[in-house]
Image (cartoon, rainbow, N blue to C red; front, side, top):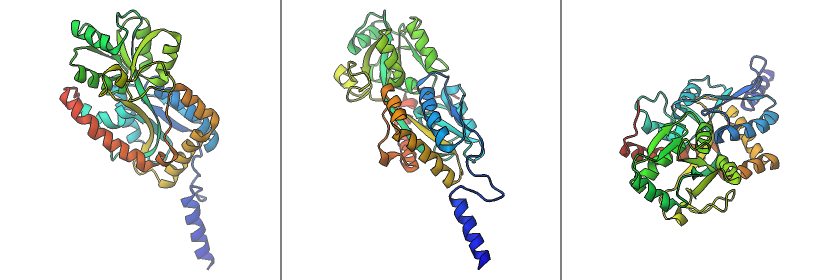
Length: 326
């Protein structure tokens, strides 16, 4: 009888993630959150807001590590190969966990099978920004200008496979324009060169674009959504601006490596959910233009479904554009 009680107690502790005398509770040391882009970009900003709240909830520091290169796929590959113990996670996005499948013929991971989805963190539309001195004021003006100056207009992206690059592919496909693509290693570098007039245009997440728009340093032409964004209400949607098919919603989500124990995934999921429910964290993200998922969509299953649907959506467009790399 005593032996049965001991076994039962051990099983309960294991399920709760508490552990036994030979296993430490999770987390028992700092946790690394990998951001697949340079510091200062929209993904990095979200990561730091989340990390601050999650550190308090989990009782361990969440350390942000920026790993750049190949549109975020270098960082994603690293996390895919990390031990399945919950101590290394990635704040991935449309580029790292959907577009990468079609973009890279020799991709070392498969987003559908090499990760455990934890939770969709935020969505945000992209904003078309042009340098202040570019002689256009509307989306229609820009399209006409680009057609009059083929391959003379320069577009900066956060890197091949990034959300800004994907939106560029969709834009040039819909408008039949020839615009020079200039890939960077992060959106903060793109913004710096746009502000300095070194490039003509970019698509930036509303999370980052709002500050530049507020300062008057750039000209916003459209938001890639059916309706205007609450954070920048004066910027027309692409539907209003005359290009309704230009719809791109950037999403950011948390993943851990495959085979991470379910109790650990649930613990991380709960910590993210708590951050979203906290007034301070939620307001900071909302002020940036990030839309948080409703409570019923904060599950690993919802994120897994999103990843598969986005791969199916963007794969054909990427291949049609001939944007496939090694």
